Amino acid sequence: MAIGDICNREVIIAYKQESLSDAIKLMRKYHVGDLVIVEDKRQGRSPVGILTDRDILISVIGENLDPDDIVIEDVMSCELLTAHTEDTLTDALASMRKKGVRRLPVVDDAYNLVGILTTDDIIGVFAEEIGNLAQLIHNEQENEASRTVYTEALAD
Image (cartoon, rainbow, N blue to C red; front, side):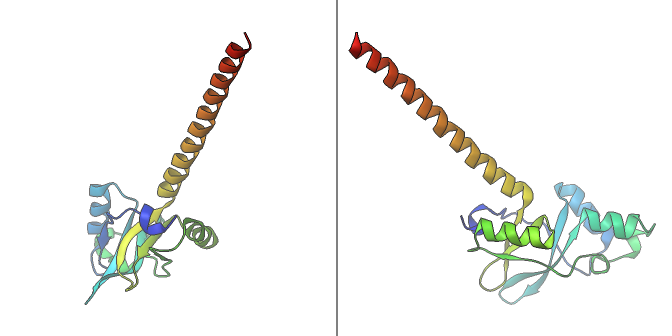
């Protein structure tokens, strides 16, 4: 399964020069735990970092700093792990596990941001697949019960 097929295409973005206070308001408005930080390029927007609620908590609140005095660039994570739209779910999950991240911006061939893959998205995919498997087992059991009843009726 390709990441481009399952990633969330509605990504909340911000720019590294914006104030941290504005970023916090944006996260609250959209009920998200992260913002993908982008730069505008001629061909689109490229991800350059990510700001998470954890970054804010540890680097700002934990240090008793005023968010009004800080810009996103001062707090965001710059070592950004991304995935390509054609990457498999297995590969993306392995990369996320290796780097210890729960969110993965998804890019196209030109390194333009097209979506984000989160652990919640992955859990949703797995839950759907487990549901499909459970339905398959249920259907098989019903078919077996029907065959048993039919066989017993023929024997009578």
